[in-house]
Length: 541
Image 1 (tube, rainbow, N blue to C red):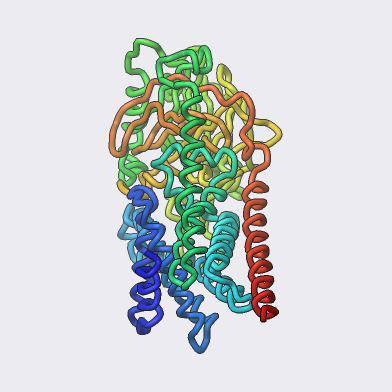
Image 2 (image 1 turned 180 degrees about the vertical axis):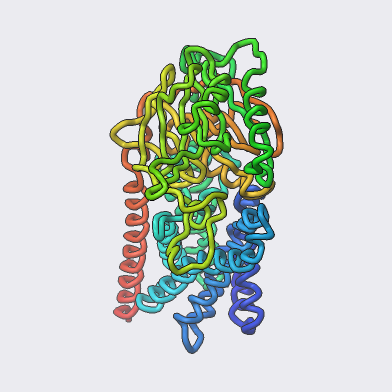
């Protein structure tokens, strides 16, 4: 096998410029198909190992750092063109108004996000040249830099931690249990190391490289899988109608009305949308709900400001419980009008007993950065930008454990979904994934949100306008769900949270940061050992 890899490596080093460009893009595309909704996980090996081989070729070019950055940027372009191709969907909702922006949005998103892989390639080749890193050390430092820059991507310019590498395992619940201990960034680190390490087989040190591949590419994922399988085997069984692992006295009804985004805000249809939600909420059930949950902006009215519409919606609230719904909200007058994307808890007599305002807004969707300079408007209908709420909150809703509400893509931010000092009993994700189309976007969003349940050890209840709605246990397993494009309801109990916070819930991203430091230290030790061996060979007769 080592000979085969060596031959492939040599062929890669001899490729012409055009073929290297095409191969870099192709490898990026392959890496995207390892992610949801495709989950072809083995593709991470040719993708990352092949990228490292191309970076080796770049390191021997006349301008190595520039060549490395361009090579990795091309990889990133292929990766993000496939991974976030759904970004065109919001512009098609009102194509007459926003369709002209599609080429700029897709190219800008893919090219901009590809700057992070570009920086990874530049830094990896820079370190490799400066410190003469071997194949194993090069793979490790590549993984450290890649994951560090994924973390940077999670907060830079408000952050976009979509399709982090660790999400390739979201269809493998046993492996995803590691997120409870090391977070998604720790899972990403394991994944990138596993995918990149076979590159060392092509550099001529067959025995040592073979051992490294056996440890990092085979044994490490296998051990993580086995540990996760043991954790799941010891976990309680959560079923929608089984009270033993559920919060007593709570019965949820999640409503998925499946209203197309093009129709959602049409004035002549809004009253009918409200009636559809009410009718679904009041369907008979053997076990009547105590709380009804509608998705983000389910009601295309300003409920908090309109007593008549709020009274109509309150018909859906069970007596003694509440209706929890997303709705726009406005404050101030004509001179200081402010708009909010909110979650409201409404009792059957029309009172608002709890509320939350979305704090992590979507750039260009809910507000326009640099509005004074960019000649465009936000995608969400309405004049003016939305205002950001106060930040992460744990709120109290009568009859329910304390909850951390997450509106739309607030659920994609690792370590930022629950208040550390006021731990909630569950997470509530209200979203309108109709903006994301009917394929990859909603499925990726669902997989990402479910990972937060594993990390925090908290159940997650998700209400989505067009799907995917679900009740997810604190191990990240859906116990009830409605798929894409389906109208209906989910009736379920509320799973109990884990009795104690997970290590990641306690320490957050300090844990994956420590892992990055450990791997970087391993590279130092490998280089130290390499230096000692070199000195011994020099001193030998």
